[in-house]
Image 1: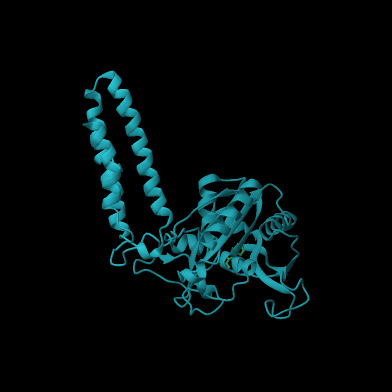
Image 2: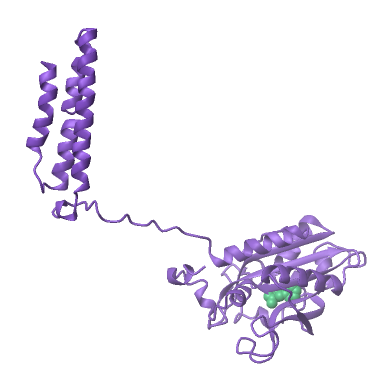
Length: 337
Ligand code: PHE
């Protein structure tokens, strides 16, 4: 009985099979005979009721039938062509799979993290501060008098309660001095806000990184050494710098630090407006009034501070011509990094 059923199976499959049948019908056919609940499996179920001798014989036969069926189906698959695919079917099995898109970190985040790692390796801590600040931390404690033009309603976003969106990361200097005292070595990255029109090199929100180092006998030599070190590490080549006198109420003396243009190596090009140098950051030795405001004795300690625009640095590194791209959220732009 079982033996006949098994032998018939092959003919049944060949009868059911039609050349040029649709892919779907073909899969159904294969499943009908070879599937887990298919014809062959049904017959095999009865095997255990047989006597041992018979079990052996039928078992062997069943195996041969199974092999034969499998090779029949795989032979048919070899002759497979697109013609067999039923176009009315919703799933086109011949289509290549769709590649899933993988995201990545924003260039600002990437470079910020790189800088954080560099400064951590130099013994600095990474400090955070609030974007909504008080006039005290953003201005007063930083030796910026009430009549200073930067405090004007024109340049700062004030809230109705009299707070403001920080205009620089320098208030974190004061907060950190209060928190940790001296000696102190930190950087503080963050978004800052200025009430101004945006163009290719200005945005009303941008990223800054503040640096502060306070210890006994800190001088401009330390400022220069640390600056050259982190700039060479981030640009992955020797960087030349230049200091010009610059005024910031919270440092004395104060400087503007320029970088020798990385594109033309100082010869003059459109990126550096033919000057050979690019303005990079404000810096200087921390003003005694600022140390005092932070609770540190200026007779015992001195320090340097700097602040630079992260967006600017990224633009220089990647040759981006418009700062507004960075916060545009435009996928076509971001995909390039
Ligand atoms: N806070 C200054 C700015 O926003 C930069 C600066 C930081 C200058 C520290 C000197 C020292 O431009």
